[in-house]
Image (cartoon, rainbow, N blue to C red; front, side, top):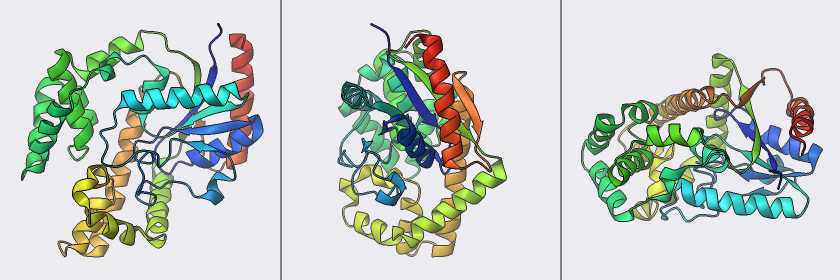
Length: 315
């Protein structure tokens, strides 16, 4: 059986992935499968910058707001859910388009990932408990640095769940997450993926990030954080989202709201840098210069490349 050609749109936060994916779906009869580790959770519409109905323009979007934020949701769980979505979309003779900025989720779908098949929720919980103590995030990150310095360099200490997961993988298997990923890259995946990366010059992307933060504030970010703070223990994922800890700190009087917004912008820029580092290491990515291009123009270029790719692959 020939493998399904799977278009993928990747890139840093605020790079215009959703708009490009929607425009592409309108051209090729597609539906979006989100690959965003925050947008998958419910109750975090603004924190996760989940697109609204006007942005989605009647194009079906899958795996958004479908997981309770208290749930322990792994890359393996995402892979199973995403593959089920992809199969269902393809069965209706529509084109699944994987879109998001979480490189681990994209790899989970497009590459075999043996490490994610093993998990120990009890161990993971103990590692998260380390991070809950004063200075614990730094301690947990150092634990990872001792066994897997490459993953430690890739993950910020505030990305507690992923840091804990990387430590968990090593303790369960005796092999680092970095080495598992290297081995997985040598295997063949289930699809013939064509991955597009949206590139922006650094300053232009920073300006887009600032504009997004302003839009999130205007949309009611402070009120969303207030609501989540009331049940913080039941929403451990929300606590990890950029914007939550900054706005929450301002609401608790620990810093001014202006400082919170500044720190949120800074953290979002750091996230974009880490995302670019991840995707630049992937030789499969076809980079498209998004500066000065409309979503429609980018989508037309993608469509042409997909058609050529299908012809070359015989699919």
